[in-house]
Image (cartoon, rainbow, N blue to C red):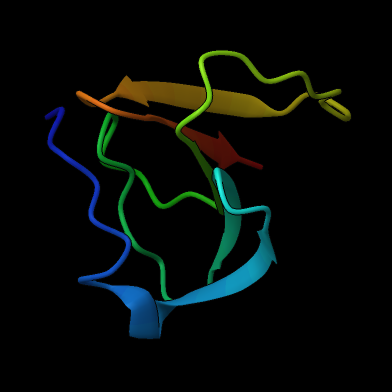
Amino acid sequence: MTERFDEHAIRHRLKLKKDAGHSSLFENRDSVACSVCGEPFSEVFVTEERGHSFQPTGSMRFCILRDDDRTCMFIHE
């Protein structure tokens, strides 16, 4: 199912939680489907940086999508 993720096209269905310029974190407020697996995700982290460090909590599952200029990490709870 892998397709490009366009957060701007569905902005009204997401809530911006954090914006650092080169990376953003959005909360899924409307059961938007993951571009990788097709299941709704809880949050999506989008970054233009080549590397990013984070510490997952609990038993979180996530999907990774690499576009030409950025990486999207869909977090499923």
